[in-house]
Length: 63
Image (cartoon, rainbow, N blue to C red):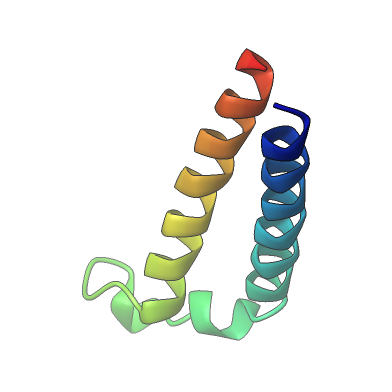
């Protein structure tokens, strides 16, 4: 159980790091032509990271 918790904590740290890196690429979020159009790959990755972060946090809270 301690190994699983450490593994989840390490994964959470890595996910948050990746999330922060994507936030630094704000120029990809400011394209006014795409406000109601196609979602960029960066936005898709951001959403996936946020979802996985929530999942890992939920698992950690259960331990």
